[in-house]
Image 1 (cartoon, rainbow, N blue to C red):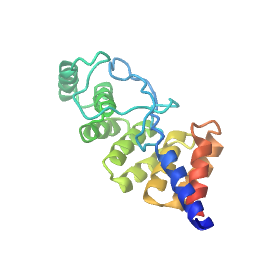
Image 2 (cartoon, rainbow, N blue to C red):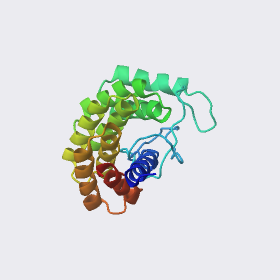
Image 3 (cartoon, rainbow, N blue to C red):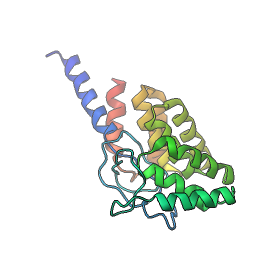
Image 4 (cartoon, one colour):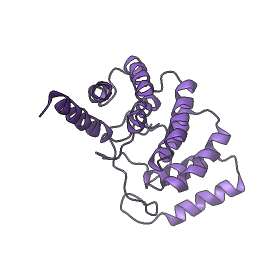
Amino acid sequence: MKQEQVAFLAGGLVLGIALGFGGYHAWYARPGTPAAQPREDSTSPMGPSAMGGAPPMTMPPPAAPSAGGGAPMVQVVNTLKKRLQDDPKDLDAAMQLAHLHHDAGMWQQAIPFYERALEIRPGDPDLLTDLGICHQELKAFDKALDLFGRASKASASHWQSLYNTVVVGLQVGDLPRAREALTRLEQVNPQAPNLASLRTAVEGRAR
């Protein structure tokens, strides 16, 4: 096998590994959200989210939001929706609804609740990043990158949005954007998960 072919295959393998790392959702306060539990190893090609520096997470298939024991949370969701209907500025209700649907892998359903939360708390980098992940999972990559960019501008130290930018940049083949975000990520959080693998993936695609 030619040396160029070996390099290409190695680069593809590295990229596949890098994109296999799960997203990290910034675990900012989620009071009273039963489904907001840390998830374990994920094969979802997401970067870190606003849920903080958690380890890779597993995204369950789309289903009704459920509690840890798997019991349907219809009543909880309906109660939160009623709260939001009664008070459109109820940030806690909007965030809980967004997170519940996000954690259940119900990306499309989570979007309007993140958007409502952002109307109440404009420019929040955690909310922008989680909303971006929803669009990323729906393959709306341009929208996802725009949201991650807004998040990193809102907070220069928000490493999750930078990490997600690297991952999506690799997904869509935007190497300059991925490389720039990776450089900033290494400066902002040298201890970010999977950093060495991301660097290898970016360098492998650049060859």
